[in-house]
Amino acid sequence: VHALGHVLSFLYDTPHGATLSIVYPAWLKKMLERIPGRIADLGNHLFGRHDAESTIKGIEAFFNQRCNVNDCLYRFGVMGVFNGDGLL
Image (cartoon, rainbow, N blue to C red; front, top):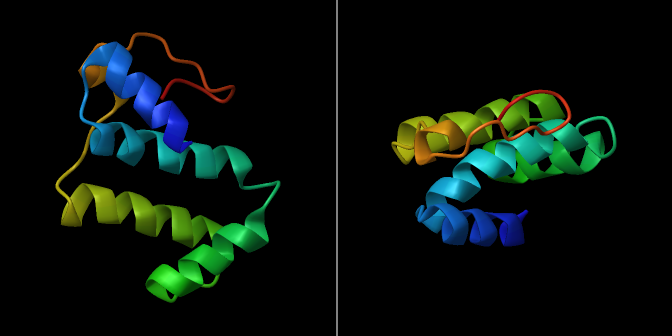
């Protein structure tokens, strides 16, 4: 995921932290069925949350509220990026 943030930052002249704040939650959603326990463990350590879905929501809230990052790839000129479940 981190490497993908570098690639998107380079290709679309986008701040690296902004691309990570978009890509990381999307990746967690994609991995939810494969590694729910690991995501829940992350949430427990970061936020005291004990389930994977709540963890993902907490990470999104952190980026949106605490870091004032509320973006999508479309805002940076990335058109039609398909992640298998829909557009990012």
